[in-house]
Length: 503
Image 1 (tube, one colour):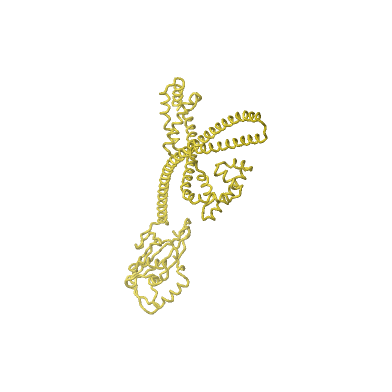
Image 2: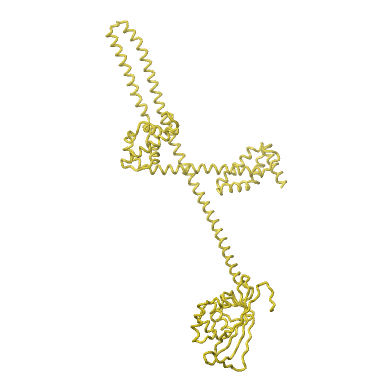
């Protein structure tokens, strides 16, 4: 880094002391990427404006190279100066865009008021004549003579603020008068219309043509006055000597007056020509300004479109990131659901197996073809509040079913010891088939034959750190089906994390 700084200083010194252009080109080549990148970021990616800023920065370097300190860090100086020039360029662009916007609004307003003026023009002079003298003078000075508010106030003998209020009041009255004629327009539209179209340019040279006869008419009046003086002198009979003296005195005066008249006429013609030239110059200047603003507005619209495209790309990236985050959260939720219990679990519909965890949402109506299916159907019926299948699983005789069903509806299925459990783990299964079928008498006097038995020890859990519960189920094979006996044993398990003395 130190070697690079020394090299920059040497190159700059060669350029300043020896005028070595190659040394300056080397400086430009070395730092142009940094300068252009900084400029592009500040001007929001405007390529042409970034180039202009880059060129300005190196032109300023060439101009100020002699005044830079010998130990200057050229890279740092270029960075700071680039920031300054780019910020100034951005401000200039904003002002230019504001002017363009104003020009577009004025142009649009001119187009919209063109047809309205054709309707207002026939009634305008009559309406202005109906205004009070003070209001009429304010309107004439402001919109016909194109005076600013300060000049209007001075002409009316009042302040600038008072002149503004008087003009506003006069416009409101003028709008009311035009409204009575059936013309509907706002005060702002009327003011804009008067500013732009109330006065049009007179034909070139008309002032000189009008001034000549007027001056000549003035000279004629003076001549008549001199003749009248002569007649009066004759009537008074002052004598021949008085007449000669009058002629001698009047002749130089008349010659001098005619010279002054010609000089005044020439000055008026020059003033008229100058006014016409200024009007033409102002019109051309306005057109040039409008065209510049229109071109600048088009460039600004292109830049705005590019910025919007960049914004859309950024929003798409954000949307993709959010989609990925949602997918990750869904996967995490799925994993958490699967890991609700650390015990291994079996798929829904499979029969119970020892040391397998069976979540409650996987319990199904598996029928009664095996003791495992019967236990699963019993748990499903209690979990689903299916009274009919629950009574089928528990071998409740038909005469007692209505009474049992009514009892369950009264106390609710939440009374079952495994109600609300998250899942069950089959802790042990013991099958004890008898040596021969056993015939038993049930409560209604009927006989049943038990051809097999099985004992299930199941541990239920409720999650969230709640204590579990162990239930012993006795299952018997009666005919082709397996059914549960009603004498299940229930015991509470310790809270997770506590030692179980029974193990």
